[in-house]
Image 1: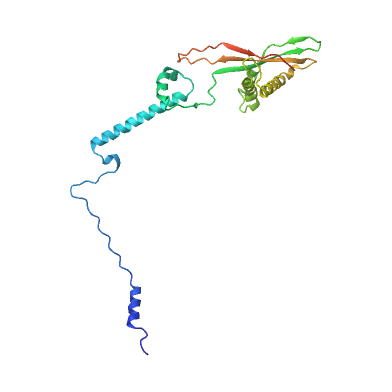
Image 2: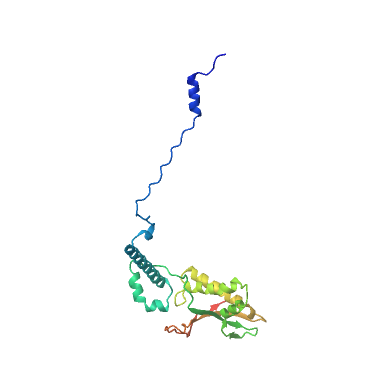
Amino acid sequence: MGNLWTPDDRDAMDSNEREPVEQAAAPPVPPPAGTAPRAPGIAGLSTPYRVIAALALGAVAVAACAHLAFVFLHVAPSNTVGKRHAATIDGWIYPEFEQNWKLFAPNPLQQNIAVQVRAQVRTAGGELTTSAWRDLSAEDGAAIRHDPLPSHTRQNELRRAWDFFTGSHDDDNRPNGERGELSEAYLRRIALERLAGWQRGGDRVVRVQLRSATTAVAAPKWSEERTDTRTYYRELPWWTV
């Protein structure tokens, strides 16, 4: 039986079975003699350049901290440091770095505002009497002072109602549109609800009057600011029930 493979076929098969020979990687080129490797970053600079870079970074850091301090005092609520250096702060901020926002919104309260009410009561005998002022804010404060879970109504209802009223009325207690009339009705209903206990034994509330007692919080002892801590009252007109 003859050979089934020709020389050309064997050569082709051998060439397919052979694996390519990988080329050897070129060896790394060593640095010139007497030359030390250069470190990355600032450490690779010479001593004079390091000093210049350190001074530049220090100046940038100081400028950034000073800028942040000026901006902080500009947007912070009124304070002793800001008042003392107001000219310097304004000279840095205006006009390039002017800010139209405040650090706290709303600003921390600097006044104690108490809402008080009194009533004219028609007794069972037909006599009309006027009660003493009743401090509703003090009653709310006493109710929540030692309560671990104070009522949301006790905390906010009266305060928000008074803010609603003052924000929708002018200084002469005249309402500004429908919101003013709505705030009057809301405040009147709250007062009547608090006075419901007086309508007993035939007595009936016929008119109510509210007022606010505003007292500024005294400045701290270390401050040179002088604050008028007298109590000022804003009385509303009598409202017929």
